[in-house]
Length: 560
Image (cartoon, rainbow, N blue to C red; front, side, top):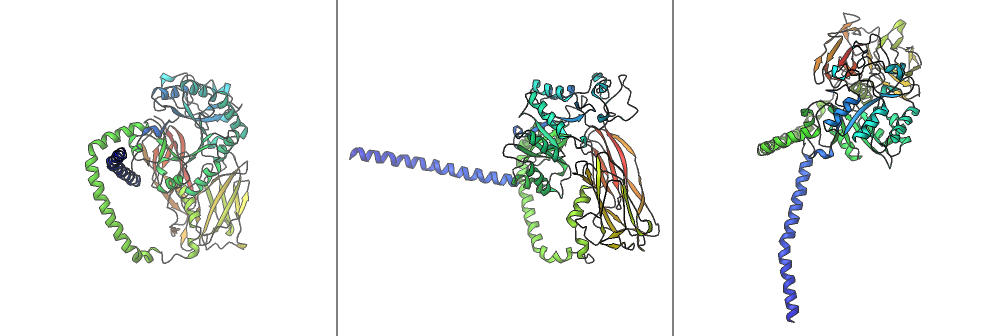
């Protein structure tokens, strides 16, 4: 009995001693989880650790060394980068080399350092012919006599230096499946299979990589995000398999809460491009798992934030509490007034027909032209007909033209199709055109494989015999070309001249007076107000569109 009593006493004592510890652990766990939940709901400038966020050196360390060359990637390694990005092009004799542009002219020089006078496309020159040019001296005399880098040499360097290459298949590259198969085979031969990432704006190129290597890591590159979020996700889903790794590689200024939420729900990581400053990193959504950067690494911004937060934690907590209270008060006031204000949100003169196709038109107008179809559109009205013409672009073989009256829907079937660069439209919906009414028109371009290469902006055109409205006949721009350094910007001013000076331009709430499009956001981006910002070394064009599709373009060159 005494032994039993003693054992009972010991167990009772242990239970009493352990109870507060267990309760304390449960309390800590609850508080910790609650804190994590609250933290996840608040916008944090950065993820909590740099080890989960990749820093990808854009075209090598191109702020110092010539882009897409072996010296640039060697310098990336020296500067502490593990991930490096390269652009792949093919010579006329099928040799894969590293080059961003379609032409040599921006980065190639004669041996004496002079510029190339005639335009030379990479696809029109053999590898042996390329060797006569210097691809380093344009950046600095320090890099004189640098030859163009082959894909094979790049892979060898990555293997030797333990670098992980991001291989961009350029959308302007006009790749064949056989060429992409060659690249995948070269990666395997170099001993880098499973240690590379393939990225492209063109999802078909990525699908070809997937067909060749079921385990490939693929990044779907996107510039135009707003209004296309679900389409982007659907494209990524189609690229996914049970064995591969898919992520979205997005233009950093276009990342929205909606695309982040959809990506989370579908388990797609997000990486962004192209970063130039630490401040840009600080503003990124904490969900971001990688950055392509011209210079700063992610950890530089993280360290700066941690240093700042240590000295301002108390102040920030107070400000956040005050802001939260203010927001709650504002939200409450908005909720009370929302029902009362709702009827006033409708435009009284907006008919149901005029609101049809809203999503489609918003998408086309916001995104302007998708990669592959930047072309000056001209619309005339001879003899009560519509003649639509545009500039021929390489690699495009067929066009579908969609036309409708402004107050009607576009039809699913194109109004006209052609292999030339113009069509004449005599009827809409089986009836002769009513030249007193106003039109809307857009064009879809197809490549030689029959795949959609791009879509134009929507052109809004006043009818020839309209008594109120007329169309722009020309656009005057304040600049025709500009040379910028990365991080700098310039604003273009535009002015239209009308066909009939006594009439007004066509009013339209669906589209801005001017629409701006960059042919290569990696080089330069352009805002809705016409501010052109240099993103990375290269050359591109910025197009300025009037409402009726008429456009002028500005030649942009970005160099350090």
